[in-house]
Amino acid sequence: MKPSEQKTTIQSIPKAELHLHIEGIFEPELKFEIANRNNIELDYISVDSLKKANKFNNLQEFLDIYYTDAKVLMHEQDFST
Image 1 (spheres, rainbow, N blue to C red):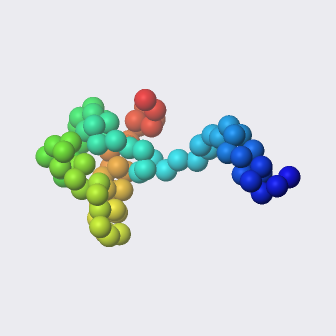
Image 2 (cartoon, rainbow, N blue to C red):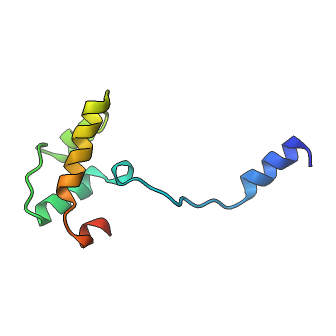
């Protein structure tokens, strides 16, 4: 099989995402919804402020968001939609 044919074949094969990190898919709207349900006060005043914080510039800013995620997720139902 020629390299160009191989590339076309690989691109045509169905793919599935088998591994996700919660911090990569946890939307600000859902985070506020779960925080409200669990009576957790977030360090952000609005969804927009959290969206802005999600555009982090360094490791510490990422960790701030990550630990907010961990604080909100308390019950089994918090991990499913």
